[in-house]
Image (cartoon, rainbow, N blue to C red; front, side, top):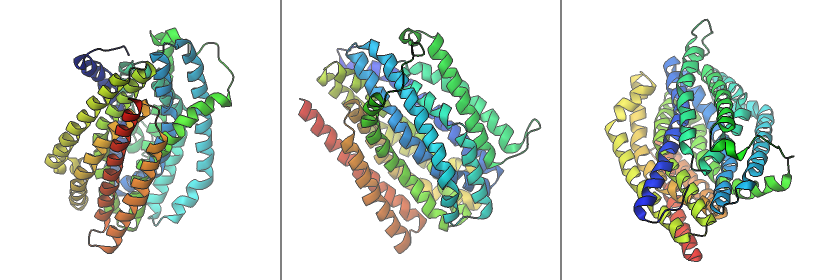
Length: 447
């Protein structure tokens, strides 16, 4: 990151930061995308099992990852204020915290995973695939959380291309692992959907090892000497990150968990309906990586300018990001409308599943419009370290407005499973509007 003077310079720098983040996010999500697509080719039960497993894992992962994301504005503020000597200590404490959170999640899973799956009205084969998929994924949680912490450090310095290259190297290896473990190649048994969990865990370990090696060897990252002169774990340092990270994590959890809750509520419908819902949601979520990347870039840019007390520049970056989000929302809607049939056929060859998937995609067009608008605003607010109100907005709009609306429409109208998607649209739209008012209020306060 560096200081810019004109809007043109800001757009150029923002693009330089954002595009590698986008490629990185798309690459990371493509791992889940190929897990789902390749599992679907193994059978509808495998697709449904991975869908249920992902619905339990993704909100937990994204919520905890929100806590880890707090290191981005912390480092951005330090570098903006030219306090680089404090960076290694902050990153080391963040690594300790990431390991502690990973261990806590694994222990929690040991206790609650089977009881949760047993409460769901699932076919026995689907339940079995979901359980062992999650067991396999759990073996890679610790390296995943360490990687995400280190990636936040890299990105906060504006070195987003490094994260991009790491993921681009890892993605084809993940696809190869999927091919081997899902379909049983090179003498390995065919695990079906469970194999995608094994492949994912192996990839997490690989990505973590590569990232550590890059930080240790590549300039300017090695100049910070992150892995030298280790300090002891300090709960006071953890608390500084948790004060910012917990609201971020819960806000993200409330958003992502509504999608998982909808998938779990749909367990009363047929396996084909679950598979079609997951297919449409999976591809729409892939498109969501674009506005999410804009939001992550805004956190870096706005945090850097706020740390340097250049508040007008921070506001300008916010306007650039939100304008980009609006353009992206329109572009994503066109993609979904034009290629609905092609997208549906990516996931499954069953005509009934394809037709159901296309119907869900039409609803996805509208829900991603609100999501693409709200994500950049959330990123800008994180740059200001304004996270508590975002938490409240997420809770109210998604769980008090969106999910009840969807449940009523699904159970008391002819929309049935599609009613849940209407509820998602209502919740996301309410959240996006509230976030915009919060950002405007915050900018007025700073001025």
